[in-house]
Image 1 (cartoon, rainbow, N blue to C red):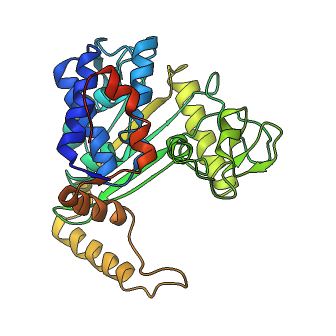
Image 2: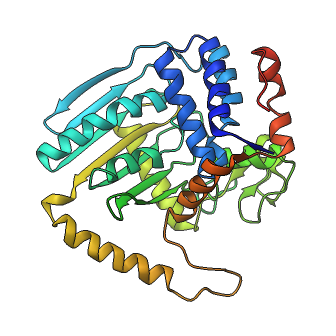
Image 3: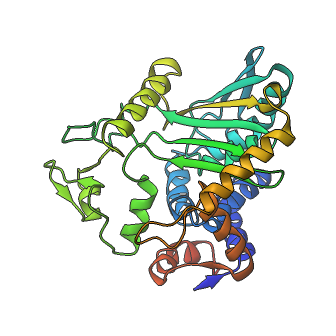
Length: 335
């Protein structure tokens, strides 16, 4: 069923406001969730609201906590939301990091002690839109979030430890690679579970370390596998070490952001010419068997954003049924 994005945003905002979230913050979180769904990143969209409500109720998300931000070096920032939404902390910190990168050429920032951060590609994209290279990665949850097995292991040791990288393609578009270092994001397992669907081979092991396609096995003591074998495992390990050993034991994950001012290296006109050439090379590449066309990183999400902004966000009946509890609790209907 297709539902207008503005209606979904009002639904999210109403629930967050009813739970005591500050008005500006509620709108930021709601917009972030809807943007993820518009781009087809269902693992970080509306279905997350169910978990957010549970976590606010339990105190895991402290949705009225003050977010403290400090400049700790000439080109370094640190934000501590005190268990508030990571989404809000990033929303406030990214403009400061961009400003520092403009003045110094490169800037970094940490977000620590936060709850869920949403789709981290949104933050690297915000940096890239300023003609900068933007990156975000997170880790450090090994003392509590043991969801991903190390390469060759049969039980979970750390979390999905995602990365996002973005660069400008032209004055309007960015290209983004946003991925978990596990075979899938944990939120995607939630989507498969909600829709009662098996997951692809190579994603999961059960509590005995055996391969499985039953998503329930993950929630019953199983684990995700690393993406691309040793490659995803290596990237996940580095994020884990930085997030824990450098930034301290997190509430969920700790995060690090980097922005590089590309104007320090290249004229924008020359850059866009080279970027456009590479983009055309990708788009004109003959597709392999089983593919209709070849796309550059971030292109599928941009096309879904354009389509669903006009046509509405397409939710399954199972997804809508899973929201019935929120509809009853907050006396509102999504459809």
